[in-house]
Image (tube, rainbow, N blue to C red; front, side, top):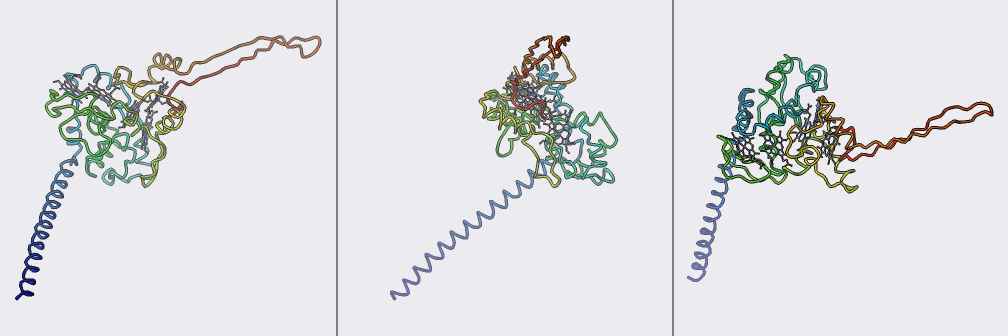
Length: 305
Ligand code: HEC
Ligand code: HEC
Ligand code: HEC
Ligand code: HEC
Ligand code: HEC
């Protein structure tokens, strides 16, 4: 009898164990399945299916009602016209990723949008072909609606790792009751006041992650590798968004402002000496020696981009 009981006990235990393992595995698979389903749901929810849907999702016109001054500043900034005048039509017609017609374009044809229109990540390839049509037609009114706006910085780029949460904004301080219809609270962002916030687009150098690498913005590299190691302490925001100025100067169209900023940042020391040089015994030649010294107080190479 003994061995039988032993065997019985053994198999009983094993079957209980197996049962647990089966239940655990079952639950595991179920949760993976549910997670995968919800992730699928999320991504398809995230991907705008049409250009209209993308523009509506990133519509910030209602922010103007309450943030009037900041809105007006932003409208004057380069960020508000980030796909105008960037030669996108030439790139689509003649570049390495040129297309025969707008219908052939997919998101792959727009590596430039990583920084010039990052919200394209949340849209389908069909939207990319609609944007190609807009660019090739030179439809300025629609191009103007495609830009780096409040939601790109205060929602999509408010986090460093992971994805931003739905329905919240990221700011410099927390606000549990933000009176907007869609973004009902504000979370304090860990990066909003940090250079990394700007560095995400204001580049380190060539983007080798693209099939056809491009190099547009390199300025953050210069900031990190030259300015900071030589003792520079200021952030991009301190020099370019003083008092949260959303125009983000310089605006090279505004010559007065640009020259005032440049004379502060690049002090020019000029010394001039006059001589009468006697090269031959009978002749004195008037001579001028000009010595100049430009000091850069900027946070990076100038010019850079
Ligand atoms: C290019 C990124 C960017 C864009 C676009 C942008 N912001 Fe900001 N915003 C910032 C940063 C960075 C700060 C923090 C500046 C600081 O205090 O150093 C900020 C600060 C703010 C603040 C706090 C102001 C304060 O006085 O402290 C408000 C409100 C705000 N933004 C609203 C908006 C609205 C509304 C829009 C759209 C019209 C917008 N922002 C567009 C980056 C951006
Ligand atoms: C009905 C008015 C209202 C609307 C609409 C509104 N806001 Fe606000 N927002 C406020 C108020 C009030 C505060 C808190 C005070 C402040 O910081 O200006 C605030 C705070 C913020 C902050 C936090 C500022 C910080 O401390 O960094 C951000 C960012 C912001 N709003 C962006 C937006 C954006 C983007 C929109 C449009 C999607 C928007 N707001 C729409 C009223 C509004
Ligand atoms: C989502 C990407 C993105 C982010 C984030 C971003 N920028 Fe920009 N920024 C751009 C692009 C693209 C342009 C050029 C737009 C154009 O003129 O076509 C630009 C233009 C500018 C300019 C104007 C440059 C000139 O030639 O006059 C300044 C200054 C600037 N950004 C500063 C900042 C600062 C400071 C931050 C961080 C608070 C920041 N940007 C965050 C993408 C970004
Ligand atoms: C110590 C101040 C300072 C810091 C820090 C700083 N900048 Fe600048 N930046 C300047 C000055 C000065 C200029 C020259 C034009 C002007 O007067 O604004 C300039 C020019 C620019 C331009 C125009 C491009 C060019 O070559 O003229 C961009 C874009 C820019 N900065 C972005 C940034 C970003 C992004 C950061 C952070 C990674 C940053 N800056 C950090 C002072 C600074
Ligand atoms: C890594 C991010 C990034 C990528 C990728 C990128 N750009 Fe830029 N681009 C910027 C930033 C940031 C600026 C603003 C810098 C400045 O003005 O000093 C800029 C400025 C420009 C400007 C000058 C705009 C003006 O109004 O003066 C042109 C033109 C341009 N980009 C074209 C392109 C094209 C075309 C591509 C793709 C082939 C591309 N960029 C890819 C970040 C990028």
